Length: 54
Image (tube, rainbow, N blue to C red; front, side):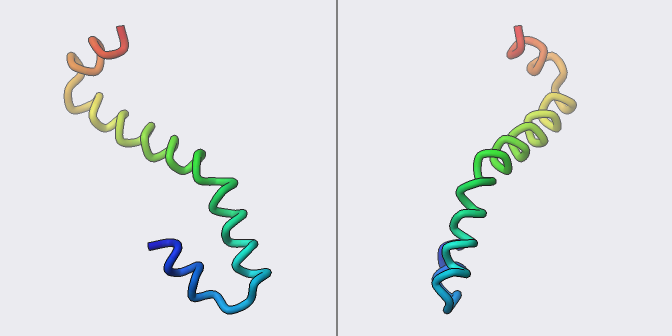
């Protein structure tokens, strides 16, 4: 989906900026989303989360 948006950008320097932004922050965003969803799952099932951590 994001690449469709980037493809729709007309200016090459704007495309390069968006691709660099995506590449720079992809790992951080993915980790943040994982941490949030993992925390929610742990709150729903404390026992399961506790045993996964140990």
